[in-house]
Length: 123
Image 1 (spheres, helix red, strand yellow):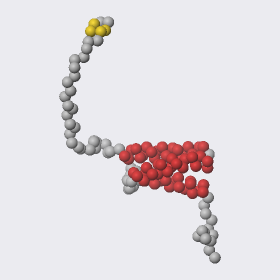
Image 2 (cartoon, helix red, strand yellow):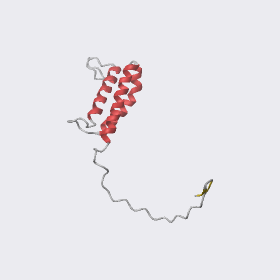
Image 3 (tube, helix red, strand yellow):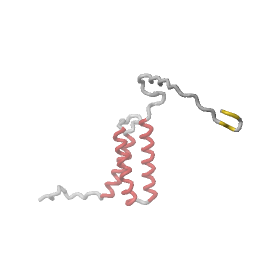
Image 4 (cartoon, rainbow, N blue to C red):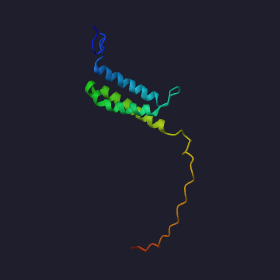
């Protein structure tokens, strides 16, 4: 007779192990998807999702790990955020995308300014 949950008798990992494994995998996926390293695939939506998930899991890590270990994950998240910011920037020298020239500003008649009294005379 089988277990109704589909459990085959193999021991499941602890929730803490799954969280830690997920965090490691999210960091790896996030960096790989920036496309900054040769041979990696650029998918900034995946990087952004990785950043968001890591930020959401930080409070859980604080319950599981000592402060110095959490600090390492915070540093990894900060580096991933910087890599994302770098990846969304246009390449150097690319300049802005070509578009129509800006429209000239309409001429506005401005009335003459009144003189202002100052100790040395009117301005």
